Image (cartoon, rainbow, N blue to C red; front, top):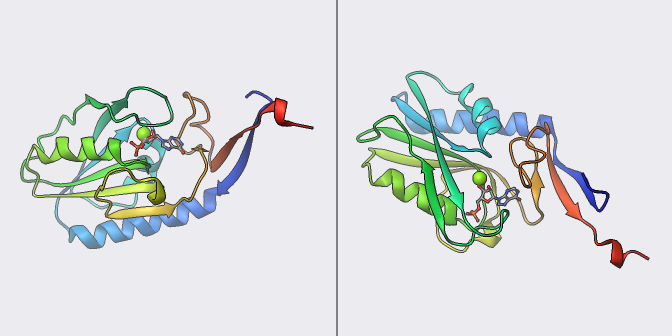
Length: 182
Ligand code: IMP
Ligand code: MG
């Protein structure tokens, strides 16, 4: 951590845990006891996914996907490629795609379209965080944990250049320009 950066709590462990439990109930109501394939979008969703799936019932299959965005590490530049495809066949399945954050929506659109090519019976999208105001493309979000207005968030799986994923709460990372200080 450089001294021109500071961390500020946005969501506590308790706030996250109770919202994740509520999302689990919403998802259970939607699936109506049918078999479900839950797909974690690596890397950012790994902690959220681990907590969420422990609120879901069987029959449940877990899988993983990864998208990579080119350009700036923190902002999607529009070129998003799939780096890891789910290994389970998805045709005719009820699928839940689990993301950490939907920002411009560009990553989610690519992931969503890649899954739809496999012709699932139904696909729902669950994201822990959503920055709705920053959307550049229209994307489907069925279950959303928290609406975030602004700021760059880290912790609970989210990173800045691979740092801070291990933080148990969600924090805003602020960058301070030392030249601007009095
Ligand atoms: P999108 O393609 O612009 O919707 O961005 C989605 C991806 O950008 C997320 O999966 C994150 O990896 C990253 N991202 C966007 N906003 C944040 C943030 O506030 N903190 C950490 N990562 C972010
Ligand atoms: Mg991500």
